[in-house]
Image (tube, rainbow, N blue to C red):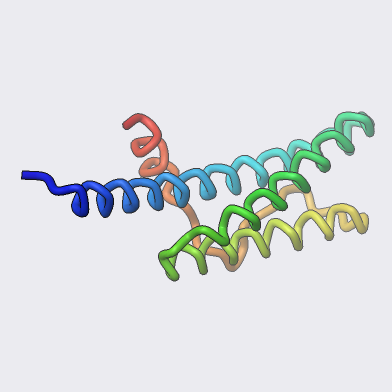
Length: 121
């Protein structure tokens, strides 16, 4: 039999996992958009490049804000590390460094297959 206290704990755990999953997906998408900005730069489409960079900047701001709500220290550390890599890549791109793609080097990789399976639930 379910008690209100147990239901609350289950809902909190589910809420935390959903938040963590959302932040991971948002980070992955932000890296993809940053790579898109690089492609747009090389093709000479500076308007789209600027729009993409603004999307990445806003995503990073949102990720940092929402990460404050993550209670699991391991997940929080992972998300913060990825956000730091994204911020460094964004800064590097804006400063004109010409790497072809943005890599999440030194950060903990996200298992994409697991992420997709979680999103299907």
